[in-house]
Image (cartoon, rainbow, N blue to C red):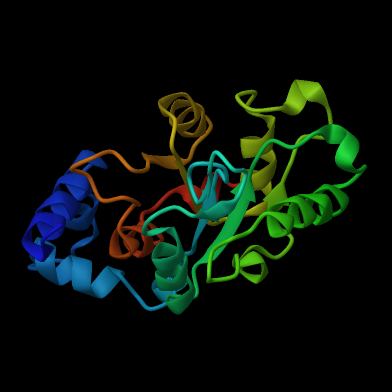
Length: 212
């Protein structure tokens, strides 16, 4: 995708999110100036913060017919760009509840499963996600039930939350519980939500007051 097309699409995304760049502009500022001011290096300038949660399978990771696993196109680059901005990331993904009694135990088993069949030349960036890997404790909590999104949002505290996934159904659920949601890999749209837009979301008003 050409840079001019990406830039144009990014502005369309900003407008679709309620004209947030214009709303963030101070007196006398235009949209471009506001975007430059709000997209801080770590998404925290001015006291705001944003956390980005992902689905795993067919959002970040593709499983081939031979069961080998690799990053989907642009996924590793997107994670690297978020890392460069010091933007916190996490996973919201279904695994068998029998894999453990805690998120940490189930995440450890998930890592074993992924790493066993990992065939990409770049290792999967597990360290980026830390302890923010939310998995179902019971069958009733499996997506598309909203519980995992709600748990991750609560853990994010006052931060605005973003959710990225490949299915429209999961995007709708994320939006319904307060995430800025984005469906990845949709043809003429950017493969993932543009990182400058994610950083700008940290400065929108409201999330800190209703967090909890």
